[in-house]
Image (tube, rainbow, N blue to C red; front, top):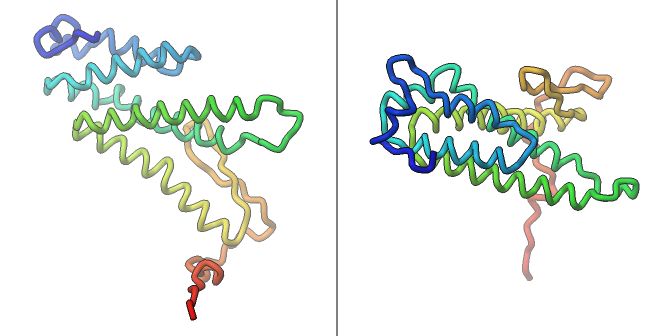
Length: 193
């Protein structure tokens, strides 16, 4: 697939039947346990996405292929969650630093991959990715930060990859009137005499 280009894409992509077997097989291997296979899948997709063919780009941004992009963001979110769960102070967990390094490396690789996808500049792909980042990472974090003002909230993921709050407080009503209060120690000014 590294040699795929606009001249030979017709041998692999059937525009009339809307079929692309290489891409379908790559999508099926995206969540493979082997990091090398996942890396190959990412390279295949980047190579295909760089081909400037309108029919191909419509194909990779149409259903069911557009499900791939939210999965990229769900995987990013899951890596971040795994990083946040590493406990460095638990002596019973021998390899916590190794786990952290592995997940940190996964996070960096994934961020580079998302950056590469965005840099190719396919407008529909960028829109889908940014919309997923907003709805699946940024807005849930903002909601958690706002609700933490009054209660402890954890992330909970259901089978649809949706974020839900686990409410740990007795009081289910959140008082939003003081949400934008800034702690006074953060806004103190140093006065030099």
